[in-house]
Image 1 (cartoon, helix red, strand yellow):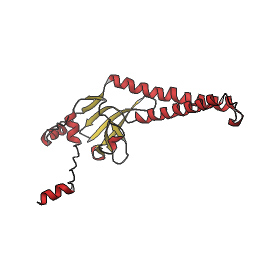
Image 2 (spheres, helix red, strand yellow):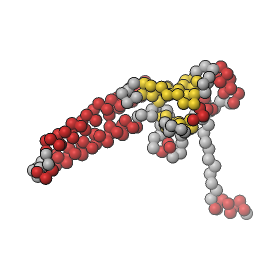
Image 3 (cartoon, rainbow, N blue to C red):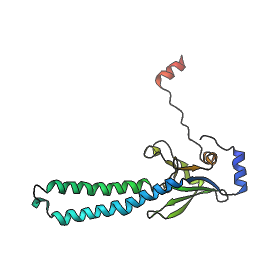
Image 4 (cartoon, helix red, strand yellow):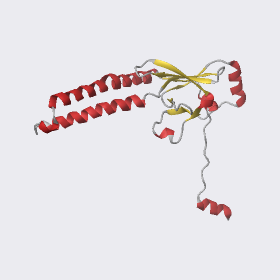
Amino acid sequence: MNATYTPEELNKINEKGEEKIIMEIKSQNEKYLKLAKRLGLYLNIPMSIFLMYMIDYGFGDVDEILPKKKPLYYSLMVLDYLFFLNSLMILSGVRNIVLLAKYIPKEKVIEFTKLSLFCKPYQVKDPLSELKRAGGANAKMTPFLSLRNIKTYNAYSMNGLGDWKDRKLFNALFPKIIKEKKKTKKENKLLEL
């Protein structure tokens, strides 16, 4: 996982100029990703709209609802919010997942293939100078987050989702940032002695 190419090996890869696949999503994970997007878009949002229609036109004004129907009214309201929020969570959660990451040394870019809202693959090319490894505060919200574009703030999730074809190349292009641990007061006093 932490292996990396030496600068000489990285220069050889750049001199060859051949495209290298860094990561490719597993076929089963791709199926689940498409299923999640379709459920969020074609089931949850229409159900939310249908429930909103039922609530508005089926019950009328809230003050005129019979006491026996109020629990049904509030249950439908909760379901409406749950369907809508669930679809937003699904669609926002899977929007950054990368299907294929390819390094193009001639252009010094990484080409990412992602899925659009309607499950159509599209490609994004980002220069190496604009990409940085995501970690720390960025990775707390999702464990899959790998890279982030500094200028456009696009995020790319690759960890744990696919087959790493060349992890050493990824580590060479985007080295891990190791922060030094701050010394506590006790350690400083011990060093002074």
